[in-house]
Length: 390
Image (cartoon, rainbow, N blue to C red; front, top):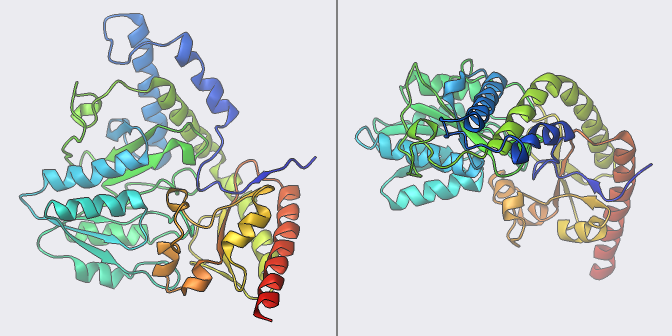
């Protein structure tokens, strides 16, 4: 039986998988030790659980367990990557290359570093939301210390040419960092074949708990060093001090393990449903896909509905269907999405776009309902526009 409201905002966050919750529960009460307490079994058990989770996360991205550093989430990890590299490699240079549609956690950190003396190049993107590789290579200077390009965009689902970016970075001896919060667990990610030196991820984007994430820091070829941004106690190989969130870490590890097992089947099922939803809505006319259709995550579509403002649509739909008109981090603003503007969309279309994010719990029955309900809402909003113009 169909249960309302229907959740199609899986890019903003995902529900915690019940198997993840089950794995976490003992670490709140029974195995509650501090992983840094090395003098008794409570601490030993906690440390053992943390190290096992480190292995689970490492396996998901093709890394070594010692290359995984736990953080409070991807935003902290992004800050650590950018500020940590800038502080450590200051004698080599101060130039960072990123792109205009990065998550705010990267863009705002870059703006902060500019005030500290960094020089930042913000690469534009094509109408499909992809960077130009020639422009990236041309932007590299003798003082370039870092290339920061996201793996997949949170609003569009567009997947960047990461392997090629990594090859360019390696060729020029520049470190390559990718915010992979939207990609890890959804599509195969391998830090070695992609030549990634730093990668950030977040548990709550892949059916784990909120408040826990990780950064991958390459240990060899090249060995990457990061200046800690949080001091005190020297936890996590001195890169991130603070008592470890053992239940959260266990949850992240379990979520990573489940994604590794189920990613392929989930992606196949979700892409079929996504394409059916997309096809039905495109069939209405005056509807367009924002971003690349060839290079994108399997569960996301971002659509613009001509003459149907997103706010009006969401007012029609938000009691029944959870959708977003942009990033969850910027959804309170009335400004059109900076991501959609970077694609070259006029304000009118940027204001008339909705993101549909499917997930592990999405059903065919829900998609049928969403097609019918969104179609009706678009027709109603468009009819109001026509009446107002008359």
